[in-house]
Length: 246
Image 1 (cartoon, rainbow, N blue to C red):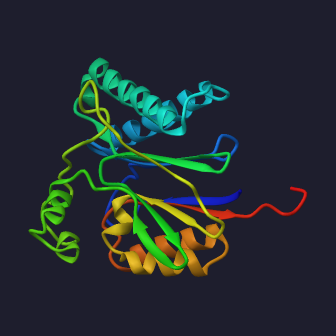
Image 2: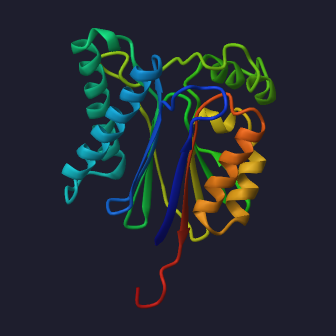
C-alpha cells in the first residue's frame, strides 16, 4: 500500500497563537495531530512535547515484534509522561495538557490511538466514518442521545474535555486496528475544523480532491471562512495501490 499525505495548521481568525502541532513521518508510517491546552505558551509547549515524544518513542520501536496498537500505547505513555513531568518541573506550565490523535500504518495494517477531542475519520467509497469518540462533556451527551451532533457544535461547554494527555500522571488512550483498502482516505484533525465543517463536507472534499495538500488547504480555508474561532489543523492520508514493480 502506498500512502500519500499532507498536513497544515492555521492559527484561525480569533486566536493570538497556534497551540496545535502535527507530525508527518512517512518513513515510519506515523501521522499525528495534537491540540494543546492551558494557555498560549503552555498549550504550544504541551502539543509539541507530546508529538515529539510520541515520534521518538515510535522510532525506538522500529523492528520490534510489537503490534501497531501496542506501539501506539507505548508512545502515548511516553508522551503523557513528558508533558506531565515538564509541567511538574516548571510551575508556570502547571495544568497544561493536549489532545493527541495518531495513525500508524505499516505493512498493510493501520492503528489509531487518541486522547481528547481531536478526531480521526475514514472516508471509504465516498462515505465517512468517525473512528474516534470525543473525550469531552459534549461528546458524552451526544453518545447518551441527550443532544444532537448539530447542537454539540454550538454547545457552550463543547471545549470541556473529560480526558487529556499530560494533565495526570497516567492516561488511557483509545486504541484500534484496521486494514486499509486502496482508495481509503484518513483525515486527522483538531476541533477547529470539526466545529465549523460538517462530516459530509469533509468526506466530499477528501474523496474528490486527489491531491492531499489541496484537500488540507481547502478544509482549513472553509473553517476560516465560517469564523475560524479556533486553531485549525488537518492531516489527510490517501491509501493507494503501489504500481507494479513498486
